[in-house]
Image (cartoon, rainbow, N blue to C red; front, side):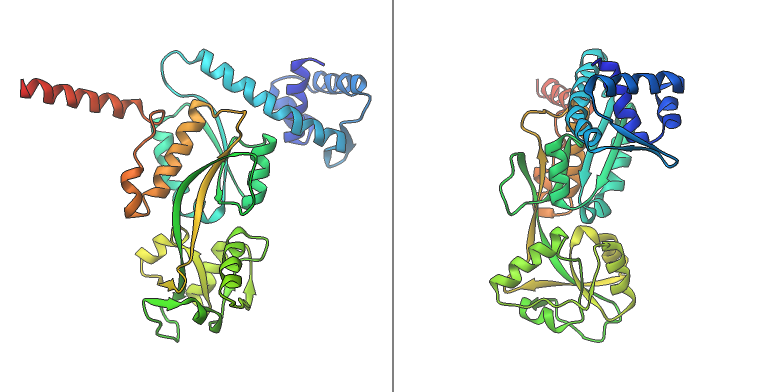
Length: 330
């Protein structure tokens, strides 16, 4: 088994057809097919089933992808660090985020990061917290920003922020709710909530069980965007974190009400693999996301300074300013 064959296999797995994989690898199709056939002969197992729709991975192919993808990523990160001589970050970043966070901060974080690190390619995947944690553990992604799991994980977990969950209604909602609403009042409203597969719903149900409150939403969907639009245009209400609706609140498209007795909140964390340190580019991107998330809460802004790997230019400017002050005092 050659390293090149593994690269070819992973590319074919991800692209799904010999034509696209060969184009991505910049080789001719017969050469790719020959290497995959040699690999299958050596393993004594079919890795793909050929069909008119493309190359469908077998169970052996899926297992091989899970096992070898982290190895290829580790090799790529090592190569990037050895070749990096000018101090400028490069390479590829692959992280995951829950949609309720991505919706509020991802675009701003991507714009900032792309301006500072133009040689880094970024891939961000959204999904459920449990799924993203599994992907980090399996090496499909390098890090994920998720709701803090209720069960222990064999991953590094770093706290990012505590965030209140707000009761949200449209501006033309029939009930004039006060700024603060007791949790026991929430079930009396016409609710639209995520399904029980969603991490936010799990958090809400935990509070409901502790307070002996029965959440019985009339509408359930895991599309946070759809819930928000439904609440804006109808008499539905929902419970969501501020980060998911901050721009609509600023534009006056929604009304927010604090939930009390008890106060509803969630913990946002980042998870990484304990045996796969982040590349400098990945660490810088996670630091950028973390700072944008913390900046949403005035109480945490002071703790949201850029990470050392994030911007060497800022550190240099600070050093120059300190030297200038020292010269002035002298």
